[in-house]
Length: 177
Image (cartoon, rainbow, N blue to C red; front, side):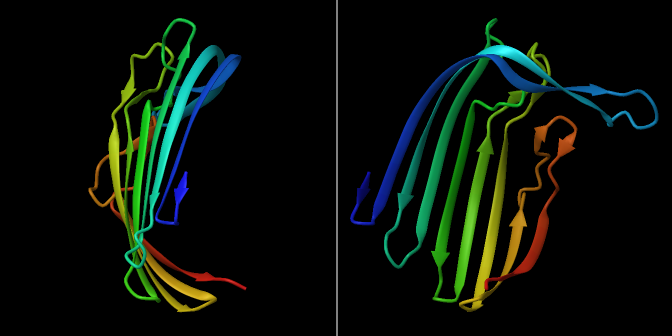
């Protein structure tokens, strides 16, 4: 739904059932580097219920707010959650246009906890990732930017053994032609 370009509201629901839902199983190896392992691609019979809500607010000259809430329940036939599928994802971003050439874009991302195994015994904790991006448009084809992620310096894991970088700051040049 859209009203006079001030806001937009989207939502959706989904259901599916499959005899072959793919998922990863991580198997650690022995030796001097136990964090290295083997990832096997397996399948399970599963049912999925999911939905999302997306809201865009455009109050005019003040910027653009984007908020997305996703729900995804993915379980096998025995009621166990399929690994690496968080139940909730939330993403909120605000694009503040300071003037025509400078923009500031803070954002926050939340992933609920998830399991790493089909038995649902090993859990990855939920996490919040706070980020910011500052951009300076030099002309219509050239933009400079500075971006910081994981500003709270949390130990965020999306997959077992793959820790998100601690506070990370980077920059770059975006050239369009």
